[in-house]
Length: 183
Ligand code: 5GP
Ligand code: MG
Ligand code: MG
Image (tube, rainbow, N blue to C red; front, side, top):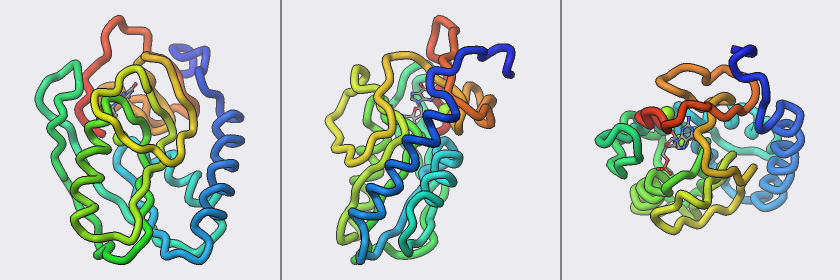
């Protein structure tokens, strides 16, 4: 793995520094609130674990599992809920934690679905954003890194379910964008 992806586009050190900043910012913004941190699996698992430990205020951890299906090489926009939250979020301050916002369709689906449950607030924290690729406008409260239009792997993000455990972010030089099946 290390040999294939020799040049990280975001290094482990850059991740650490940025996540520490995000954690401090979120802790200050949510102090005294009823924070529920909702990780969107699988992609957000690595970011989530580091971010949660950088937010030094009381909160609850929750996860939701979604899969996008349909067209293979581009986002179909059809998102399926594979596994739901374990508790109601009515009246809570919900912060969605995503790996990457690309077309914006996954986040749009999650915002629509979760807002029906009447949380007090509902915002998004994403490690990565590819603004060039946006198909729908989404409001991102916290963004770790804006990246160019390249298919990236590592730090939770996969190519055909592999490379999620790569400890840094690398661009996959494939000439296509791979199958974007599971979020
Ligand atoms: P959306 O297009 O709905 O904003 O993003 C859908 C999903 O596509 C993301 O959650 C992620 O799983 C996947 N995705 C988008 N861009 C990339 C990328 O550059 N690399 C990887 N591994 N997955 C991506
Ligand atoms: Mg994927
Ligand atoms: Mg995702």
